[in-house]
Amino acid sequence: MFKRIFVLLFLSMVVSGCNDTTDQDKEIMELQTSISLEEAKEMIDYTSLGAQDKLISVEVENGEIKAMIEIAPGELFEADVLAVNRYSQLSDELLKRDDWETLTVEFVDVGTISMNHSEKETNEYGDYFPTAVIEQRLK
Image (cartoon, rainbow, N blue to C red; front, side):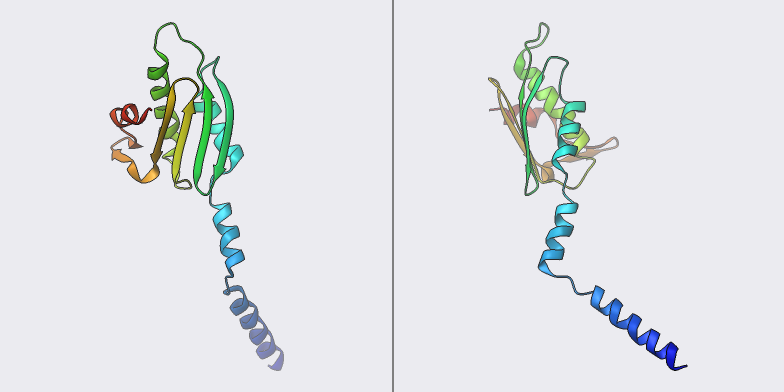
């Protein structure tokens, strides 16, 4: 009987000790719930690069994804149309996740598009940024 009480007391101390969440623990948990640099690179490579496009750089910091892409010259479409299309494809995929805040993509010699996750719209197919808004943001 004494052993059971001792075991229960010991387990309650262990469990109560596990409930103490320090700032460092919260920071680690936050870091683990943010998209990683490798995940961002992979997603950009898969969804928003044409065959001849180049991914110049990617950064992920404090919930912001920043990328620089050089769009290869196209015969059928202007570079600004391609930039809007590439951003739309990438953001559609990223909006399936909740572990980022801002997506900023600089398209070399074309312009930059930046939108916040909270600006998304939703329809029966899922979350998205309206193409017209993406076009307006291209600067």
